[in-house]
Image (cartoon, rainbow, N blue to C red; front, top):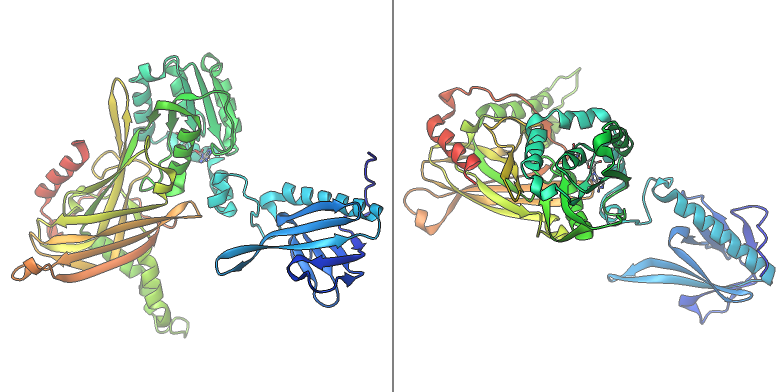
Length: 512
Ligand SMILES: C[S@@+](CC[C@H](N)C(=O)[O-])C[C@H]1O[C@@H](n2cnc3c(N)ncnc32)[C@H](O)[C@@H]1O
């Protein structure tokens, strides 16, 4: 067969013999319509012009089939939704001759190739073509910023310099040599490659270090700089959702934890890597994670946040009354979770824990997490919200090791997180606090948090379960307020019973 002649110009115009819309096949075919490849609207389109009403087919979603030498069928997938049913649109094209048909098909294929090559770099920045499970659920702009961040050495250094974190990983690996020696390891999100190097030190047979960001190049360099270990490590640049590995892994190692454990949504990638690469009953380091939640009382923090909105209470800011925006600003400040290291004496009751077992959890289970809350306050105080932190377990065959981010424990770069209520709750000693912490994943690699806390009636009538006060807030885990103070000595004027609370905290953090 003769190779088709390239059309003189791409994005060409073709005069056709006729076109027929499949959805209105009873109407007579329109004569001498024009088909044009263009990108006027920012998308690459195939435009059919017939009279006044052009019909546009987005090339990303369009397929072209040959029905005969001069007849073709053009289908635009899923172009219309009627009552939740998705319909495609189709047009049969009659060409004036074989040559024009060939030329049109060639132009179509070339434009299609260009569109696919552009991928997520389309003019409006939207990724129309889903390439992987990751791209399906994560906004391209978020992923771009995320991997740009991790592609920089300074951010990898920041994590490596968290010695609580990195030291715990090192100890967990080296103390559990038996789990690594002679085994195939996959490092999920290898970053600088540091965990791969630990695994190689522990005698791994081979380590596949999978890293999606530009950091993969630095990891190669770092690993090559350690020749005794480098023979055993292969760096693979790509997302764990997409890459292929030559063999299955006996053990996965990863550091997929974000603020509150779940921020960044990397746990999902860890679970996908498990399903793609791990042998049945293979090990995962870390093995499980727990989110701990406890009510707290912190008058200073509350006032600090409320005061931020005071700016908007000015009635004469260069002659302008700002008060119309005070309410919005006030709510805005309370929609930011606070990240800092706080004194554990601020906790009002023992924590409740939500366990995520990485070896069994389904990826979808991480899309929405709902934790019922129930506490009894041992003291009378004002509750300002919910304090949260996490820990992970390395369930080694030799040693079980925990890495904790609890308040009062050595501070990590994750600190702790507090959801602050704009309406604090008053509790009496012995009163019950109930509520929910509801976390819903969003496409910017984080979660929307809905917190509701209620204080049940105390005293006569409490058996009826009446509710006195309810307070709730909605926060975006992606937009925290980094307060980052070191633990401070809090004065006893905050209605605290330090000794009792300290004991509570010790119980929560270290009895596992
Ligand atoms: C928290 S850092 C940990 C880096 C390194 N493992 C360490 O412990 O120092 C997470 C790393 O995983 C990478 N990453 C995140 N999601 C990924 C994915 N789906 N596929 C491959 N790498 C990913 C990030 O680019 C980042 O370098």
